[in-house]
Amino acid sequence: MIAAAAATAAAVLGGPQVPEPPVEAKPVRPPVIRMSWSVPRRYERAWSAWRPSARSYARSSVQPSRGWVDIALCRSSGGDRSIRRYGVRIQAVGSGYRRGVRTPRCRIAFRDLPRLGAYDLTLSLYDGDGAIAETTERIAPRDRLVVSLGDSMASGEGNPDRPGRYSVDVGSRRRVDWIWNAKVGIEEHRRVRWNDRRCHRSARNGHALFARDLEASDPHTSVTFVSLACSGAKLVEGLLAPYDGIEPPSRSGRARDHRRLPAQVDALAAMVGHPVRSGGRTIDALLLSAGINDIHFSDVVEGCATNLRGPGRTGSACVDEAIGAGLQTLGPRYDRLGRALRDRVDVAETYITDYPSNAFDGGGCGLLGAPRFGINRWEARRMADVGGRLNAQIRLAAARNGWSYLAGMTDGFAGHPYCARDGFLVSLEASFARQGNRDGAVHPNRSGHRVLRNLLDRGVVLDRPAYPHRRVTITVERLRIGEGFPPRARLDLTALSGEPVPTRHVPVIRSLAAPPTGAWVDVPPEAGRFEIDVYDAPQPQRRATAYSLLLRVGGATAGATHTAADELGAGTHELTDVQGRFALRYRVDVRTVPPPPEASSG
Image (cartoon, rainbow, N blue to C red; front, top):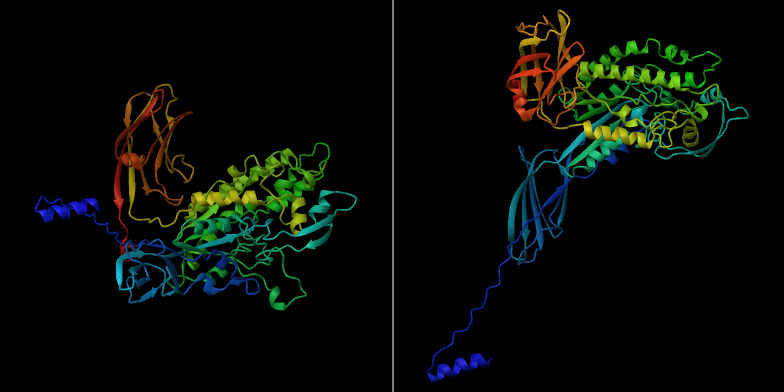
């Protein structure tokens, strides 16, 4: 005030005027639209839509007729102005559907969209006078269809949704054959609960845990999970033909309840349909676990657990006689399943896993390890051999039928066998106590199913197109073998696809012969030419993202792996062993394979 008075006085007196300091303008804060969106969760809704009496899921839960999305604008700011209302106009890309909403609430839900897919959003903020900000966004809500087919490992046998409480009276003589053949007294204190009692199916299996995790990993994607897996199912009786179930209904009920369960493939086709022939859905991921019941592996366990071994007895009959010709019949059965799936439904990718072959590492214990009966170490090794042969059959079947083979159950169970303190398998005692029968014994427990879930988390890859990809042509031009090898030494050159260790694909093997003189010799083009299709990573496991060459001469080896990092090896190379005793010169040509015309137009 003193300065102002002095300036006024100076002006009156005609003296020099002192200018007032400028007033700083307050910065204008612009409005900002911040949008997030998500889709409602469907995993639980689809899982609870199972209808045991109809032996199927409600069709509306598998094939939703509407799309859905939740829009949130709550983190938006009006800047210097107050937001009174939020506006969203939504329009389907490629169709005439459009709808607009203006509301004081910052969360807006759309539950009647005509379909899933791409939508353009116009987002607006309003104060009392009108719009203060507007922007556009494109979103694409999705729903994944994940299907589980197979046997007890897929159904969750041994892991009820709610365990029961049962007490067991084994009598005065604790003989294992009495226990295994259910000659026991069982008193029920609390009834066990399953999602489907007839199949001993629960939400605690690895396939269901994977589907739940898949949905939780992306707020823009929901998951419809359909499980038809049934404990005790085989490739034919169960997946391809009707089946009674592991616990058929009592004959005291209605006659319609006593009908056999439809084949899993038939039930799936009826619910899902085919997108071309019946307007159905494409299955994003089909999860398979099947084959162990076809070789009667439970009979192997029972035989070894009740085999009376006198002096000099090895107990081999409990393994050899039980499996019989089962392993030999697996191949045609898997191929029949592959044909049925290709004919009846449309599947983007099929995944099949191995079984834990080392379940009884070290032998049996408890009721499965009673003296003179039980499972000894020798029998455990024999059963592990059977499991390994089964897994080999699964891997070959996957290669023939275009499935992705995910190996990891055997490795994941290593160190956690049936008798370990932290074992990954349900004991026979726990099966009786928790579900009132023997059926859950020697199945993965909750820790074991987490191994299966983690295996699927790592191995299942979605939305990876098959085209375009690269076709790698490997031409072996010249070969040199040192004099230290026998005359006409055999040379095996193997082209394997896989990264980093070639364990995923069946190798292509060629044999060459060259005189071990140490001189370079030309290789006939027909003997040393390979073609491998290589895709961009990540890909489902059956598609190579790299390739390796492995050269064997006698007991010596040399190898090389080519990936996208070295342009898939395009150019000329020389492969030699560390001692320089043999060498190979080869040329790599890489070309892009475009989509076929029908794929481009689709």
